[in-house]
Length: 209
Image (tube, rainbow, N blue to C red; front, side, top):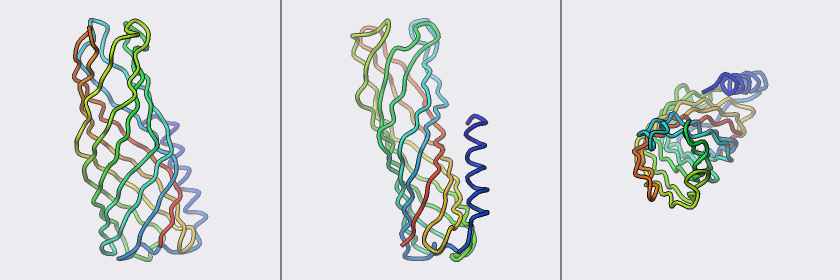
């Protein structure tokens, strides 16, 4: 994650902490809804593409949301959803060669630190991700070639923090690591094993009920 994104997350948490006037109600039986912006930051590596270097995948930001249910005061289960992320794909030798969209629904078991009525609830999560790729388009020197990416099933981990605004509303910041491995298939060029393995940074507002 670059410095700008790190500073933005830190600023959000600082502002939320200063504005905090109540306690959270993250207790057994509660539902937690979070909505905001999520940025996918690929940490990619791949096979060499026809002597032009590895695939390079740019960042993308979209609307993201999570829904969590608290089984106990400290243990929850969360589902991540988002509007489709779209990334440009290039290599050093060929420039931009493709665009691809994906949806990365993730399912996480979570542990929340502290008491149910704490003003600040940091948490850790681990679970599974299923990434669906679609709307692949070719550009540049391979324009007109069919491009296809295999869907991916892998592990995911997260760290986050909720900071109360009042007894219902809270601010959230979280970071995810998602294991996404795929094969990029370019008709007439070849198949290229690719590890995308993004960090996902999310800032959001939350409501508990």
